[in-house]
Amino acid sequence: GTGNTRYSGTVTLGTSQSGSSYTLTDAERGNHRTYNLNRGSSGTGTLFSGSDDVWGDGTTSNLETAGADAHYGAALTWDYYKNVHGRNGLRNDGVAPYSRVHYGNAYVNAFWQDACFCMTYGDGSGNANPLTSIDVAAHEMTHGLTSVTAGLNYSGESGGLNEATSDIFAAAVEFAAGNASDVGDYLVGEKIDINGDGTPLRYMDKPSKDGSSRDYWSSTLGNVDVHYSSGPANHWFYLASEGSGAKVVNGVSYDSPTYDGLPVTPIGRAAAEKIWFRALTTYMTSTTNYAAARTATLQAAADLYGLGSVTYNNTANAWAAINVGA
Ligand code: ASN
Ligand code: ZN
Figure (cartoon, rainbow, N blue to C red):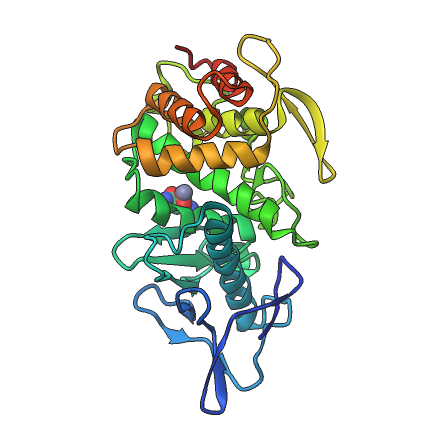
């Protein structure tokens, strides 16, 4: 089918035909389905269905539009894990979670739930800014991956690493998508205007730009909200991917500082993604803290690129740059 999204332009959607109508059921991606809660807050509402296989018109007054965005974001995330990491669904069992949009009234959040194995999206302030951008969808779906792999506890330092994992792969999915209307960046939620002034929710090059996130590890990191203690790990990912200092990527300017003022030479985003994915799925556990995350990524880097390789050494340097050392 064809989706006329709010954030990603006109896209192709995986749909299914049943009788004379179509539904948002993606048979090529584990039967991922997208439901319309129509401002309800429980159950699944109704599965999006229609006679023309064209979904939404790019405006939020059309209730199909948020459905098209959410369906597309889940498809991109599915494709990313399959194509880049060889994972067939979050549980590697070929079965997709499902998505629910139009949750509540002017609800300004989105969330993952283990109990339903599903993602849910509010319509945002004034019901006009649905939380259905590519990066938000990838962030929420990645909570499902973390839950069935490392299982990082959602508090303290492990909670920050859980949040960072969702932000890291949100950026990775957005880059991999190559969507002209929503290009890849190291910002989170830049499309949903959650602050009402055009600024993103989070910045990975210098997390403190949001006014709350931490740039570096410290002994008090575990006491702050998980969406702020994610900062140093998001910063690690940026530094490992792009290096320190000023840089422009896809037209967005970054300027990433380091704890000790020493420069970081990048390993590249593709390597940083592979290292974090292997660390998450092979070495991290529910109680992994920042020091243990460093060890996990170094084990992953040794597996993938060799102990003492340039990539291994620069992975370690990116940790030192956020004040996590040997
Ligand atoms: N949108 C938030 C998140 O995924 C919801 C929450 O606080 N868990 O992190
Ligand atoms: Zn989250």
